[in-house]
Image (tube, rainbow, N blue to C red; front, side):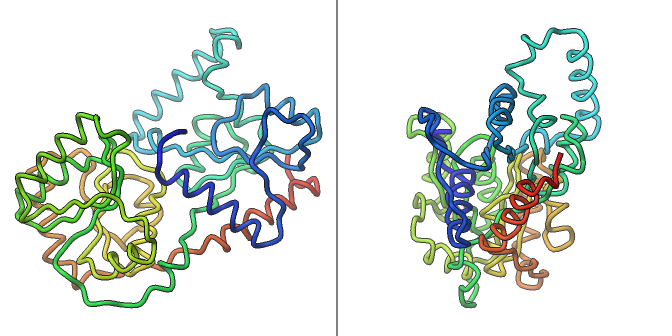
Length: 326
C-alpha cells in the first residue's frame, strides 16, 4: 500500500467524484470507535472477521480488489488454482485459511470489478455470488477527456512504474532492437531497485531510440504527450484495468497492449496486441509493425469520467442501503 500507481489514483479520484455528488465520504479511521458510517468501501480483500464486525454494527461492506495476477493466468492455470482452493478449503481448518481471506467475497454485501473478466474471476475463484458482483470501471480525469487534438510525433509512449511486472526494461530493449522511438514515463518504487538500474543502463546505451525523463506530474502536460504520441504501449506481464491505457484512449492514441484477458475484454478490436510473454525479438517485430501502422489504426472508444463512475457507485450504495443486496 506504500506503492504509487493506479490504485492510489483510483481511491483518490473515486473519493473526490463521490464528494462531487454530495456523498459524504471519509477515509476509515480504524482507531476511532466513534466514527459512524453506512458503508465501508474497501479497495482490498478485507479480513472476513472485520466484515462480520461491520455487519454487527449495521454497516454494509463493498469490496474492490484488483485481480491483476489472477486475471493474467490462462484458463488451465485458473482451473488448477480453483481446484487447489477447493481442496484446501475442505482439508484445512478455517484458522489456517484465514490469511488468504477467501471468504471475504462470500460475506461482502457487494463486490465491484474493473472489468467483466475480473468480475467473472470473483465468482469462479472465490465463490462471490454473481448477483453481488458489479462491473464498475475506472474513470479518466477531465484533463484527458477534454484535451485537444495535436499533430502526432515520432515517439511511442509508455506510462508505467519501472518495475518487473510492467516489463519496461524488456520493452526498452525491444525498442532498441527494432530501432523504434520509445518514450518511457514513470518512476521505480525505489532508486536502488536492480531492475530500475538495469533499465537506466539500457536507456543510457540507446538514447537515439529510448527516451526517459522520469514521471510527469502535470496531468495537462501528460494529456498533451498522449495527444502528440504516435501510439501508446503497455507490455505488462499482469495487469488490471490500466489507468494509463484509459488516459491514452481518452486522448485518441492508438494502443498496443499485452494480449491479456483484461485488455481484450475492454478494448477488443480497438487495440493492437503483443503476446505478454513474447521474447524481445518477437516483441521488437510487433512493436515495429505497430509503429508503422499507427497513423491508420482505429481510435479506441472514449472512456468514462470519474463522475460517471461515482454515479454507478452511488446507485449501488443506495441499493444496498435499501436492502436490495444479499
